Length: 244
Image 1 (tube, rainbow, N blue to C red):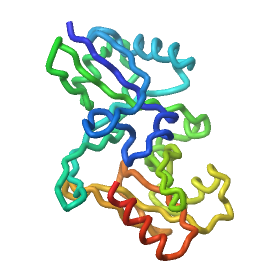
Image 2 (cartoon, rainbow, N blue to C red; image 1 turned 90 degrees about the horizontal axis):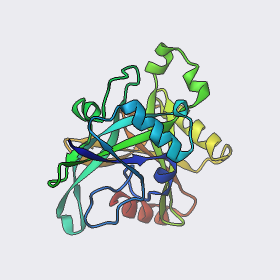
Image 3 (cartoon, one colour; image 1 turned 135 degrees about the vertical axis):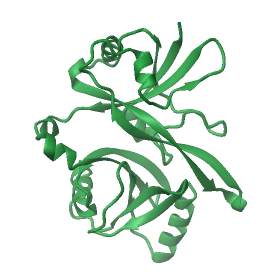
Image 4 (cartoon, one colour; image 1 turned 180 degrees about the vertical axis):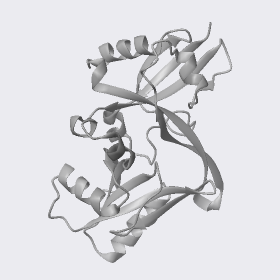
């Protein structure tokens, strides 16, 4: 019987994470993110595991759903132009709850970022916990299909700090996302907001500014940047920012 160590990324842990990704898991050069962690046997039913998790986090099981994540290998140029191989986590799909017989092993087999630790038949699995939004759950299936889940972070050029804001469901257009961000952060009159997309092109991490009518790729990771200083400071800040 195999054992799974399951880590849960939440909205709270995402907000506290100061890197580009959802969390730091196995980067040996940086301390790992502090995440809720549970253990489970491969034969445990997923719905039983979800009930245990709900009890631990003081939620009702119908308040949230869990996503399996996929790891995308990226090549990021470090200082001195030395290529560095890194992995990026992105939500892949929701764990289905219409199968009472689905086990933790089944979640693993159906595709996830699970990896084998190399000893004692132990596997590691990371899931993203999404708190359900009643207004979105009330939408039709067709309306939901037209939306993408976009994770947003804020880079404050004055403080030189990158922090998570949360995720939004939006249509493919930067203007709608910009309005949601301003409403969420109570910055409706702030015109000094710029959107940048962190995307992958041939396994290379790129950061590109989005115009008001531009779209993004599915499951992209967007950054919301606040600039209020001179153009010189702006260029300096974005140079440091793009290095990650």
